Length: 429
Image 1: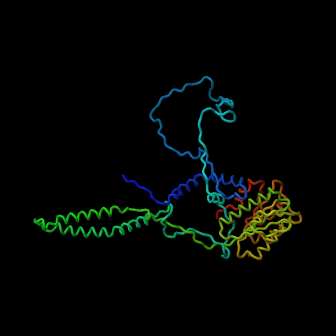
Image 2: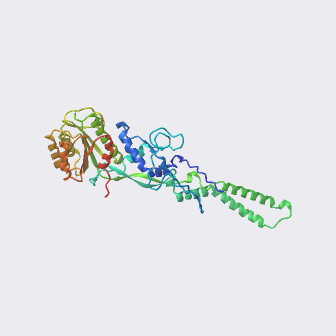
């Protein structure tokens, strides 16, 4: 019987293929757990891993069982209480004989749900699956770098799925030739010498006999053959794995403008939802696009370009003039991001409260200066109440810029992730 012993050192990666298959099989459960986790987590805790529970009924494997087979005869007793069409009464609750509320049964058994953890990397993969920046078109090539995986020779370490059998066997064969070459050459020489001695005429005089020399040659040949046999047929360092590396490829340049209303009408709940939305957007951009520029603009009565830290955590507030943010965005576009060289995207979050005289100006700025230059502009209104003037002004632009302008409403934190996916869903070409 042949025993195969796996002594490879990459034991920690042996289950990688099985884990990938497992994640693919229970994708529905994992995506639901990711969506629920986003709703419950705080801003600073949004990108860690997650525990996923799978009901016991969903992990059962189909099996074949032997049936009773043959011909059987059975007698089933009838009843005097019921006939076809009768309605059976529901068992009383709390007696231990039925389901629902009441006292627990004193018998029976069950199975706990299967719980496993997904890593931070896997969590983010599921969070941003099938998302992309809409209408990304080729512009003048700038700093942005994307990557593709290409073949890059072979490696001595890797996962079993990438093992190169031909290269591994070729290396093992070359190693055996190198390690046994001298011994095999010595065996050939000794065998030729042995053949000459055995073919020589036999001498009766013991003093001139070759028997001792022949015996010593045979012993030496046997020793060398056993030495050759001890060389393993394939060894650990013979294994070769296909290697893939990330290769930068030219891609398009893009910039994302993030506009957030921090006026007095925005309560802490509104600001928290806006922050969560923009953090999702920021993580998505940084994860999927290597060098995309992100411009953060906060506004109340005046707008200001800020860094990431101030954008998410500053407590500055004031009145509401939305057009100040749009004017600043237009100025930054003209000075640093010409539309001929850049794919321009923008996301605006507000509660919709604005001076009535300012809302028409916002619509005019968008329709005349901003929307003709951008690839995609998304407006998020965070309010559980009826829409205000700003929403109705923006609605007039939806038909005119159908492919590049989108509006969504967020009522509570549970709407953040569904709305985010709806805005940036990957579209089939």
